[in-house]
Length: 120
Image 1: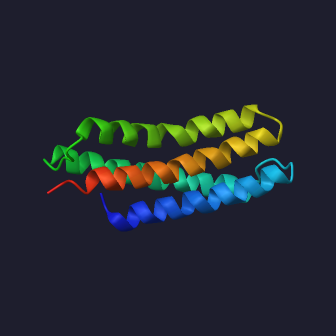
Image 2 (image 1 turned 30 degrees about the vertical axis):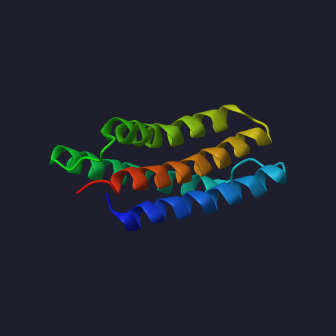
């Protein structure tokens, strides 16, 4: 995994969480810019997962490989699940779900980076 990619994902996730929080506080549904940002976040997470899988198959592995893979799988599945939940929830809480999902992705990035730092 690459440090700059992890930082970029975490920064984007925090920015999207803040934007989602503001929209939820104003009782607004997620707009096109927020949804586009969340899709960009998912694409970055998928790129990160692909890099991690290639490195794992190449022999690089953190000390806690099981935990690392678990966090990686959750980070890949969390955004689509949050999007579905957000679309189904017609109140401002749908927007809040996206904000929380983005915040959790940022935390997962920190944890993935910490676990990966034990490689080599």
